[in-house]
Length: 397
Ligand code: ADP
Image 1 (cartoon, rainbow, N blue to C red):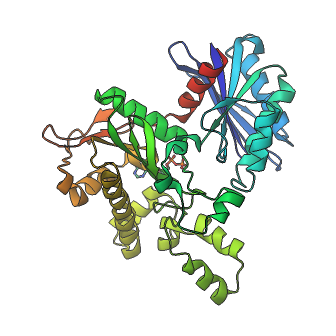
Image 2: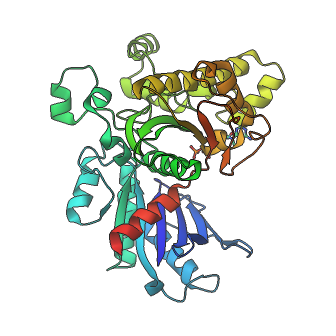
């Protein structure tokens, strides 16, 4: 069975064609600048030179058509679209309607549309991707895999905000959590790789990338997660502030004569380590600056790691214990210093001990804790595309 995985942004489309026998990536690529001048597609097939197409892509349907042409044409990996069994789509927000991935029908599209408010940047693009596939390859099953479904198992005490209940009733304002596909995949993989109890294992996953979030799960089911109604809550990120006193919004709005929308834009796009340092949202740049003695770069890294550690502490308490902590995503998979400092500076009280030699690794499933560590520590690379493909296979078999 071959599954095409599509992740649409407002002006981009990422794809992977995965052969589910052996879970091998046959081809992957990226269409950029959709709807903008200078659109371009890069199509990669392992072992071959990249195939670049520079042509107008006025909308996502044109991009999807180019993707299918690339997959089946001269640089293709299948003879015809018939070989592609189904399409899995990443969808950001499913509101509180979907507790699982689902085969797309008119009702599902309606709900994705109703959630535009909750995911204004992503949901419209995700729906465009689905509709483009329906148009270009009619009759193929499309599956929506939501970032929010992992958070649907959160207990009420974890998902309710302490604000008037009417806002939940009227607008479904609650904590949802994001990066759900990654947290679900990494927590399951931690249990499998670590040989932990599949029903009872208490696992904390630190997804530390440009966007960053932490989850606590028992037997792979989420009990808490750090992002909220939107991805703004929780950790300090590349450009997002994470947790903040709501009064800061009012204060900046009043003193800088800005609207709430403008301040939210600042908190989402101009804050985090970028805002603190004024240097970059990329953690490698911040680390370089810190090495050269830039004080705010040092503070930003310290604050980032401190917040990660505080959440780990909170989640160990939430679960009344923790068996394993897994690090994933760009920083989690590549930055051994951050992993080491989080554990050494803050997690000694849990009996967590990192093994510096085992920790000297990048992007590979590895046990990084010492043999006498009371909590197992892992590096587990995330693979959201594979998780989407697995769900799509399960639902369309
Ligand atoms: P996203 O998918 O949210 O865009 P990623 O998971 O790809 O993010 O992570 C990107 C981040 O990972 C960047 O900030 C990048 O600097 C960071 N990163 C990658 N490699 C390293 C490294 N060796 N050390 C520190 N940070 C790294």
